[in-house]
Structure formats: C-alpha cells, structure tokens
Length: 201
Image (spheres, one colour):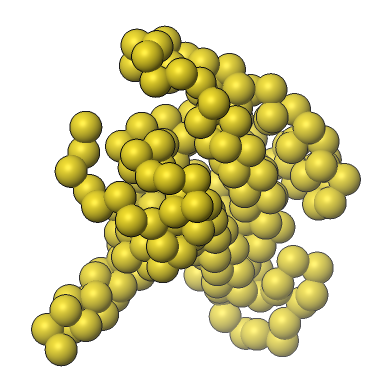
C-alpha cells in the first residue's frame, strides 16, 4: 500500500494532487477528448457523478476480497452507474455531443481515481476525511477539462460553445491530440513552478 498521508482535504485533489496537471493520471481524455467547450462539458458531466458514486458505492466492498477481484467489481459497479450518467449527459448537452466525444466517455469507467486512488488513498481514510478529498479530485479534473475545452474552442473556432466571438485568428493545431498534450504540458509546468515557489516561501 502507498505511504501517502491519509488526512484528506479538498485542496489535495483540487490542486496539489490534480489528476491531470500534477499526477497526469487522466491527461489522455482531456488532451484527446476535450477538443472544444461542449465536448469538455460532456466529459466532466460524465466523470463527476460516475466517479463520485462508484467510489462511494465500492467503499462497501469488503477489503478481505483479493485486490484483483475488487478491481473487477469496481469496474462492474462503474458500468452500472455509467448508463444513467450517459442518459443524463445526453439530456443536458445533446446526444450529438456525447457521440462526438466517442471512446473517451466509456473509458472513464476505469479511470485511475476509481481503480487506483480508491485503493491507495481514499479507502485508507475515514469517510469524513475521504469525502472532501474525493470531491477535490473530481472538481480538479472538471475544472481543468472544461478550461482546456474552453481555450481550445476560442483558439480553434473563435467561439465558446454556441456563442461566437469576434476574433480574427485560428490555431487549428490546438484541436489535435498532440496540441492538447502540448497545452496541458505547458499548464502542468506552470502549476509545478507555482507549487515549487510556494514550498520555498
């Protein structure tokens, strides 16, 4: 088991252990899937309830069960929550947007917050400490995902969702997966620099 501290806080997942910009555990769906504002919102809408409900429900699975079986059970529980979550997302952002995100929504069923962090961190905490930490991880992902989609929508399409901006420039490369990784890599470097400066003061 991990030796990470087990005292949870909202800021850990939101900032210090952000799963996209710090640990990089969920950089793929954001870089490849959050190509515009609507897609980013769809990813965040699915990730948030899916991860919260799955982690909370799977906490009830006995720890005596071997790790391999527990992980399989986590994935099955996530699959059960995935169906109503997708239906909700289709109602909120439209089926066309959900379809355009493609495979990056189903793979959220086996995201590292559910399969890894739950084992190495969340389930080592009392419930009262786990809840704010879990919420921080979910919010941290959602903020980065939506912000990434927002910036790419402006840079590529000159718009924010359905609202068109009066801009005269476009950077089509930002819409590619490679462009997404470059953008997030720069953001991660900035975040780490800020964190290092805070440690020094």
